[in-house]
Length: 423
Image (tube, rainbow, N blue to C red):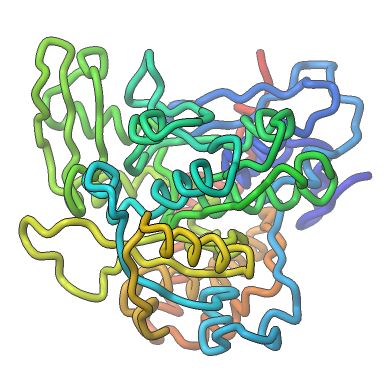
């Protein structure tokens, strides 16, 4: 079966990469029946799949599970009983919104905000009988890069806490979940969760072992080049780095490193300074992703930016309950004392994530511009993109067209990329 987008036939993920629609989740590598797909971190783009020459039989399973090709919400989302309908068009399905933090001081301190994703995962292992957690952490050999891992203990979870503003592909570790003897936790970015859900629809054994999917808020994934350039800005060679934190160790924390000849942390930049630098390294597909809050997860976590963070303030997180399974787990963790939470008003979500909402509003204009240039664009259904675009100020509506057109012309996005296969 061939998938067609903007007059371009997508036969395998090499086509997705060629037209810059890949999000780097790793779903394609896991699902390939012939294991002919390898993931490679292209330093200036991100983690991308490469198809072994002559190895693809043309089954297109890799394309069918690719969130980069498209995402789709159930059209009945707005009328589903129990949802906060005022949030559906801008944020997807939300049953409840809470704010709080992990009760464990180490998890809360090391986490990016309140440590809630890690605390909920730990609860699932210790009290819900889940086998472990499939997620990502820093690579042992190259600490500025990420690796997929499977944690079974609190110590292993703590070692992997904190945001990672560089490419990560947790779906490449789904075989660990499928092979487990019982249910597991999956933690990932919005695109990772969507990749997981697509695979679950065709892999019953995997689906049976997904105990819960916890998503994180995401504004896009910078390439590895961003991290290397940020280190260079402060006169540090990546070869000298023993550990790196993009934030965390307090809220929101700072961009910090530990060098191989020094056991102390060096704080190089504030969170705002570091992210302001790194966001310029986000690839095209991140700019047209409507899901910034893991709308397909059972629970999603992010920062409550509706108020200014005080100096020395310990971390706090927003938690969105999106499914009944998510509600069950959150209430269990609350009762067992793993988290401390208070329910907050729906308005707090948009107040906390104004930039993410503006980004979602701009996507309709960006996608239309891509199509006008004849560039393949993803199928994005059920996100109410046109209605969100209408809510933007006129200046931002215009920018969604002109800014995208400028990016397409200057970066030559009208031409396909060539880093799609092993040479």
